[in-house]
Image 1 (cartoon, rainbow, N blue to C red):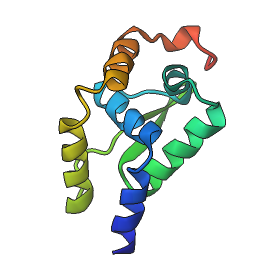
Image 2 (image 1 turned 180 degrees about the vertical axis):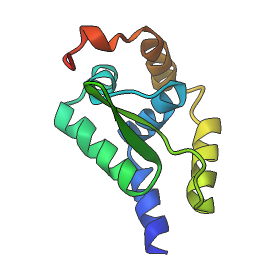
Image 3 (image 1 turned 180 degrees about the horizontal axis):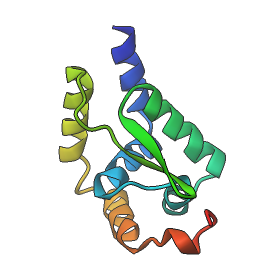
Length: 114
C-alpha cells in the first residue's frame, strides 16, 4: 500500500503531470523540460527524481544528454494503469495544449545542455 501512496503523491503535483504529458510526445532532457515548464532546473530535476523513484519514468544517457521517457513494458499493474489514465487525461487542458505546441518546437541544441 505504501508504494501506491507514493505514486499518488507523485501524481498530485501539476508540474509532474505536465512532465508525464510532455514525455508522451518524446524523450526529453532536463534542459528541454525546464524550458517548457519555466521553473528552476533544480525543481525540474527533483520532479524527475520523484517520478523515477515510483517507476513512472526512466532515463538513459545518450551522448551529452540524459533523456527521460515514460516507463514502457511496466510489470507493475498499478503503475501501468496510472500511465494509461494519464494518457487519456488532461488533453483538453490549456496548459497541456500549450506544452504540446512547445514540445514540437523545442531544439535541445539551442538550449543550455550543449
